[in-house]
Length: 492
Length: 122
Image (cartoon, rainbow over all chains, first blue to last red; front, side, top):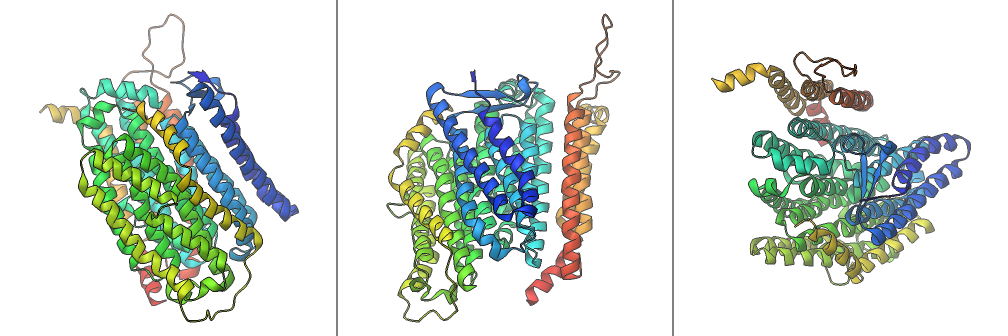
């Protein structure tokens, strides 16, 4: 394996430095502070693009932090799947930040905006590092940074429901990280390594000797990542947290933060656990059933909501479960669908939360029933909402179709028609709760009654970019699918 | 009999797991927020205890290499990791307590059940 240049660590360090600089600069020049973070995020995205070029040229690369080779040092690995995830994280966070620059002025007290930038940079830095790291303990530390900053971007809005939701989230995620660390201890006990690749060979040898330790660790990992990614029975913290947060935070949390844990679980399953472990106990089967229940219940709960952002939050529970179903079906086509859904849902749900944010910004309306006729006064936010809904349902021409298509193919390939029906039923349920909003917004005979403030151009522009991203991911998916196919064949 | 002797030999693992269960149970069932934070710390400490215990070898010394001496060394890595873990746990605790202060100011209580009642009245 070749070693990479310093780009991987530069992405993380740049974001960490800007996390320190932004609040300082904010006291002096408010405008400059936002621009510094914008520059850091752009830098991170461009660097991730150069990493993609490197990976395409020379295959898998690795970077030793402090030049300590594994198993002693922390290793960052740059392979196609991780670079894909890194691009999604840096790209989507850059896109959301452009929106946040204007929306935050409206949602937060102006004293704390500098601190918000700091937390945002920490969150993106920890998520970028989580995609690249190849070390279990490093993953634990990054998970904690991610958890604290994710809670803090909720509680920074000084309203009492935000505080309560943030506390609930913090306690649940503390339970998740506690379970994760216990699992790491179990694995370290039997293998003596923390590096993913070394553990994989170590576990294959230790499986016959210490099966109980390893099974316990596997169970703990499922609970840990299930809690953090809101897998069905462990999702209770999500609706309050995502719905009460400021809109850019909701977009980040629903769009990226829950997915990064789903991706981490994918990495644990296929890069840490040896194949013999996945064959020995039905881990994938457990994930598959929990995912299928999450898909159904998330949609059913979403139908019952009257608050727009709460509905979107419940819908996230259903959508994240698709990614878990991809892992659960344990089959290249389904995994392709699941991994593609990470990107599609990051685009779609972020855009939906941003358009909900734009609606709240300009009218203050949050109740779904009050949205009648709003499409005629706010055309661009509602157009974005319409395209987003289409992608959630999986209509042709949007990214949602591609990921559901591959998931369905995977279900057929393994001969499990039941899960194909689950995917179809969920699409119908999504249509039942998304479409009435769209129809009501554009076709309703009533005039929209509330006072309307114009949405700033930068927010409108991010929504237009979102529409383009969702449509492009639905039409030009070939390249990424080919990348997945090549990367996933190495797992089987 | 063999199970019992294995348990008594590795009693620190057993203690760690008991503490972990106490912590998790209290954290999820008690409605007082301060108790939740204390339970979170018990849970974290139990994992730290387990981790440090892995590095322990009976009769071993600190890993400072001396030429020629035939000494059994303890594994220093778990200790080093747990120092990081403790720092993380302290920062999460500090953050959780600061949220509780703010919750107390806006709701006037730190009991989850009472807050639920207050919210359902809204």
